[in-house]
Image (cartoon, rainbow, N blue to C red):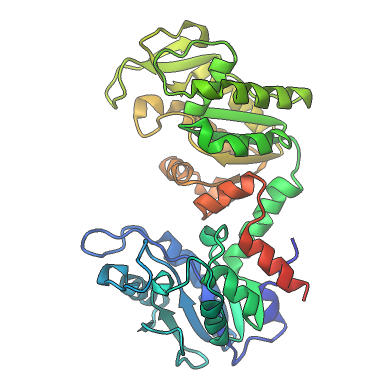
Length: 397
């Protein structure tokens, strides 16, 4: 995908003394006392800011936080905790600026954080008037928030339309590169793991991937629906019997291409959904009417692990069992360790997937960890994200 990159502008010496507006993703979790409980997104946003400062730009940064009501600023909507954390991490004061749409006073070598952009009226609906005002604040717009790349809002899309120059920051550029490597030009075999509680929420993703991947591993409640489609009994496990037809269609679409959706040969069951419920390994053909399937069994996990170790590219979205309960975490751990041991290029995304990666400490062994949940899923669906579309359009002049 051809987009202008902020790094290229810096290399060409076009950033000194320019007003740079960075749309970051600083939407971090806060506790009741208003303190940040997890600062990964703040840390991830710093390279773009440091690049701009080092190049001699006057730097403005903004982000959304939570779900504020437009036009009604409340103290809990403030980016003040983020400004404080940014300052600590960067070793400098980062002033927080409110009511900034009509003008910002910032000089080369300085950085300011502009208050929660979702409080501005017209942000969500991509108001042209608001977008033009934002664009007038800067000489260069840098989109560096992949987590919002699937939304066409004033601070993500509109400003990119009207700014003098619009480009991708280092985080967004890395996502574009990783997605292209995994989906547009993958090294084969390409194996996708799509897991979660419901087929309905991932159906379009499964359909899209079934046209492209060499192996499609399903897990969680999704796997239970596919087991039904394969004629197996699943007891009282979570599933969507009304979507068995769609599951069969995905299996058939893969089969027609000589590809496969591996159906579990064994499973881990319990009688109740609880962390301390006794876990029983059973053949997939032996599930009782009162059983709950909460994980794939060891034989299935071993078969999938071999497939992953032989893959050229792996896309991972979702744990394959209730990995929060240790007795039902072995399948997800086996998958995670197989991905870590594989020579394949791997890209992983989604909140539960990131939690599993952190739980098993394999961050350094995954090729690319995506920072955007919804945006990552829309890419897997085969959609062109608004942020990519407008930046590609601007790159063409």
